[in-house]
Length: 314
Image 1: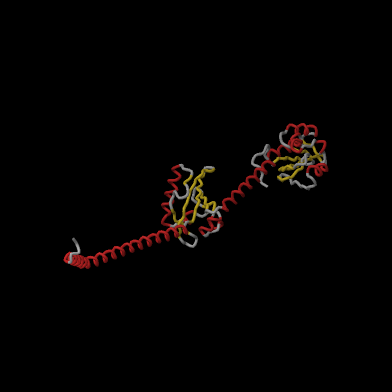
Image 2: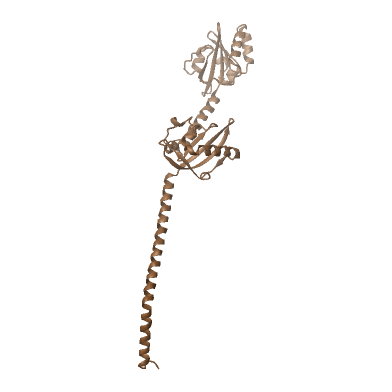
């Protein structure tokens, strides 16, 4: 259990207060406790005295919980807590309205009496749990993403590496966290990458969409190079600029594009070949026609003269 960073009274102040109260009589102690804004319980043997802040916290009047037995049965709801002097402990206490509250309790003991300082941390724990739930939800979203997601810090060291990135690059998250991003980039591109990041930071632009960067080259754990599409974003948190890259392995798409391009080139070459063949055939046909055309003309002339001689016309 972490101690809260902010307290109404710091531990050394609480200890000093306990020493001061040692010199007071019971009436003075009760009057003094009533002035304190924080929940404080004064125990003398088996009897408990507490201030209005305790009543406000738990809903019980002092007369309803004036001894350890009542405290144990009503407030602790049967739970047994053993407080160690000068140490803080988390208590789950039952309120009068039957709801629960979480309290950080610190015990200071001076001779025959004890002081219990209570700090209600219910809201703090609720916010902490909410933050954990939000973090878990975001982690699930990131890990279920189809694209690789990588976040790096100011030093370009990897601080986030999702499941898709593991599959793309062949590294496990535990292997890659804390490693430089350059591990995933071929050596010949390191200088260009650093220059690009520097220029991107200077622009002040928060993101660049997928495809805007063109195709980039990555390197897998097995040293295989492959093609990627990437989008990049930057955000400043606590004075540190974080860059997040969303990556898509386009190796298969590039392969299909190359196959399609090759098929189109082959198809075009075939068309050109067929066209050339048709030209050749036309040329042969024309040559043959040239050879027989005189005979056809002569033959036609002979037939025409023959008809005229026989009086076939006129």
